[in-house]
Length: 366
Ligand SMILES: Cc1cc2nc3c(=O)[nH]c(=O)nc-3n(C[C@H](O)[C@H](O)[C@H](O)COP(=O)(O)O)c2cc1C
View 1 (cartoon, rainbow, N blue to C red):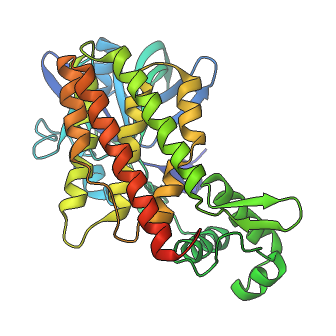
View 2: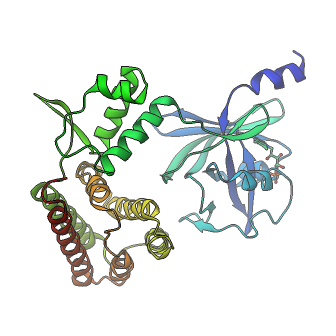
View 3: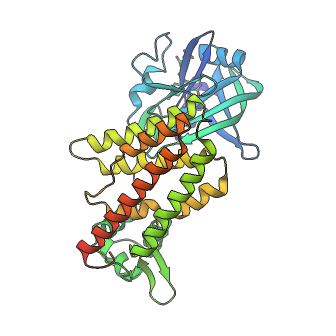
């Protein structure tokens, strides 16, 4: 096989881009890598292929631990920086450290912290078959790599249909309970029916539309009682989590909560206000907070409340101040359960009051 031909042909396999990072002898190391693959679900495993000449690869062979940092579409510069040899690749890059002290690139789209289970050899490379021990992602779209070039994901027609319909629901161009005629929408959006169906299924997962036995797809109304109940249930779940974990968190867990709280507070302080960043940072905080209970059912119940949908339908410049996330984190750190419960209660009351105002302004369900 001719090497150049192989390179050209395999280059047509589009991939994401990661920085593999590790720490050895008190020094952080990292390299850009696209030879990363999911390997097994039970147990969760992935593999990475590292050139024997890579210093990062050599450190992983010795330490048996590393982090896969999946880069977002605006991080090509980071990919370039870690694709060269050198000692100071991390200068100016914000890093976080988990329990293991391995460096994670704070702005990455996702992190997977791994321990090497087995090492195989293939040509010039070492293949690390590894167990995934910790994984976390944020919202966003990935940086891609194809035929030697960095790129980004192009939105497909059905993704565009989803965004367009979502915007119509959020702008209230489509009213509460309004039936959505798939044929009519397909005509209006100049799309085939299955693409519109796809958009509706995604909107259903967001909690914005639902299936009515008589009317078919309808816009889910933002109803005061249902929304209030969801906010109350979240408050109860989080109060229970606070009771369980207050005073018992390790520094990396607190650091994660603080990072999400700061992201939310920064988004609220931005001019103009960045509501989307605020929503995502808030959601990341709540998911991280509830995950502290290490109870998958509780997290599932929280997700099914679709608080995000309430937030989205209410928003339009009306939002609860995110400072309480910091108050809550401080209370959790010091083991102040009543303080944490009070912060959660105040926030729930604020949201419920805003809900009432939203529906009053609109003169009924929206
Ligand atoms: C998009 C891209 C993907 C890469 N993928 C890998 C890879 O999967 N494995 C690898 O060993 N090197 C890969 N490299 C090359 C390394 O990043 C490069 O050799 C780096 O200088 C190694 O640095 P180190 O010796 O400090 O670890 C890739 C480079 C780029 C630009």
